[in-house]
Picture 1 (cartoon, rainbow, N blue to C red):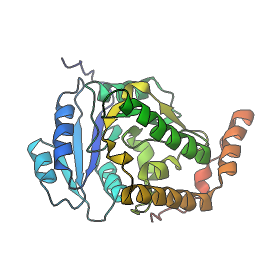
Picture 2: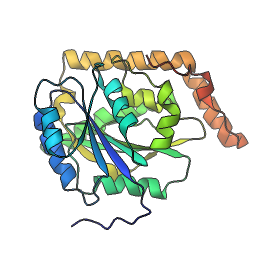
Picture 3: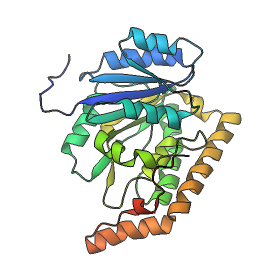
Picture 4: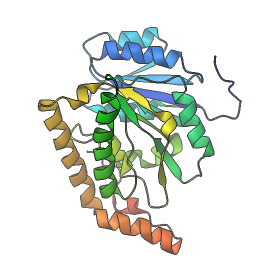
Length: 267
C-alpha cells in the first residue's frame, strides 16, 4: 500500500546510470514501481548500451538521457543535471530496492539538519545467507574505512545515496567526469568542513555479487581508487581535511576547502 504524499514533502528524482544491463534494469524498474512512495521521476542514463536498456526504460515511463562520454562519472553527472526533484536519489542498475527505499531517503533528509548534504547507507550482496551480509561487511567496511580516512568524514556509497539538488548545482563544476575515477568517492571530496554525510540504515539495498569477482574489473576498481585519491589530494591532503573539520568543531567556524579546488574543470 502506498504512503500518502503530503504536498510539502521533498520531490525526488531517481538517477540510474546503465550500460548493457537490461536484465538487472528490468528488476530495478519493477522495484521502483512497487515503492511505497513513488518517485517524481526516474532518469535512466544510457551510456552507450547495445542492448535494450533504453527501450525498457522508455516503456516504463522513465526519462531517458543519452551520455556518449564513457564511464559512470559522466553518466551519473548527466542524470543529476537532468534531475528536477528537490532530492536526487542514486542507485545502480543491479541494486535491489526494498519497498521503503525512497521513503527512507526522504525521511532521512527531512529529519536532518541543513548541514547534511548527502545521505547514504549499507548494502548486502544478493547471496545465500549469511554470506551476502558477511561479504558486504568486509567490502563496504573496507571502503568506508579507507575512503573515510582520506576524506575526514563518511564517504557516499553510489549504490544507495541521495543529495539535495541545490548542493549538486553548487559543486557540479568541481567533480571529475573521467572514467578513471570512482564517482561517489570523488563527489564525497566536495563535502565541505561545515557539511555532513549522514548514514541511514533504512536506505539499505541489495547488490549484485559481481563486484566481488577477481580479475580485470577488480584491478580496474583499484586503479580508479588510486586515481581518485591522487586527483583530490593535489587539492587538499588528508591531514588538511581533518584539520579543517576538527578546527571547525573546536572553534565553531567554517573553513571551505572547496576554495582550493579548480572550478569549471571536470577531468
